[in-house]
Image 1 (cartoon, helix red, strand yellow):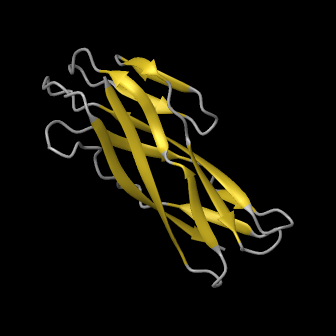
Image 2: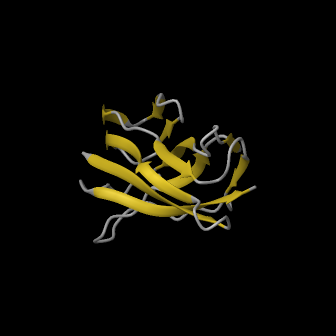
Length: 148
């Protein structure tokens, strides 16, 4: 069984008191890739629902949850990324998973206290090259840009 966790980092230019905290990292859950031909995929939506193609989901994952604080009341934060994502790999190398997309709302409006929450899902796929995936944790880091 493979456990997939995606770490998120956020870069932003804001006031000195503003901050972003990763409350939960994106976790696709524990999956089994029975046969790596053809390519298989798993999609995890920000709502927490997931779907798979040629992958067995043994334990459900959860979307990432980012907390925004100190941005001012009722401020619209615009979220974006480069659209280019590093593969999810294991520490000792081997076959990697391909992160096809990161799924999130394009903006978040802070509440009266200057706080907001963003949930982030994504889609990943296997290489489809016939090489097996070794039981391990696979991870990567992506960057989101927050502007307002």
